[in-house]
Length: 332
Image (cartoon, rainbow, N blue to C red; front, side, top):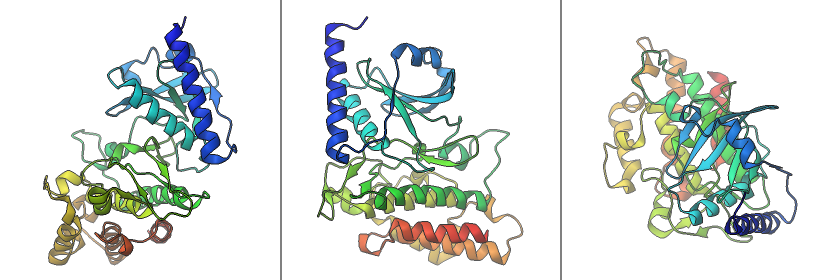
């Protein structure tokens, strides 16, 4: 039975959520289902560690199963402050409830009975971008071919382009982590967690806000001045694209270099000195490269370098990046 304090917290969560939804989307919203704490506890076997899909700094994502099918459950960790968890989860609900794109993980509903909201999404599998792309020390690991890497890049680009151009005000994802890309049982990439997303105010070209993200994925203008817009997302996407090509984490690619302002210079130096094969996963190249793959690798490497340009104006839009990747994928 909920305590008086708990009931007050539930009410505040619900009222805040409703206000955010009405304010941001003028009352036009997709209905989401209300879950009880008990049924989510049962669905995840009391949040058993064996059901964990993803571990984040502030939450865990679990596989779960209800009578009408599998689900994914996002529950904030006990050591996360209530203020932070409420802020992040409600912001995620506000944005995720509006999404209608196959490459964005669908929000099914939430539970407001607990101190902090628990979010329920469509089902995904036990692997993330990191599981597929980096080289884990597992005997059954199979390196991704170039075609599959292009498919992942294209699907993520499509999702981010939808955020930028599918609404009356552009939505900026703001946070980029390899763990934010998940895969369903059909190997379709799903962008996940819009907890830190913001909408660009009407009539404005950017949004000034405190810097949030991982070093190495943060655009220079955002890191230095806190200025955020669609081109900030393009930079973060470019970092993921580079990781896809390299099969390695950005921190390893930069050799733990603390100066992240000159990522483009570092990449260009590698590219100019040794060609794309200096930054491309050897597992993609294989022993017998062919001309078609060579042209594709040159094109996708050049796109990645443009996306992480120090100048925001020189970066492509996400629609342009998505179009280029779609063409590369079709030719692969």
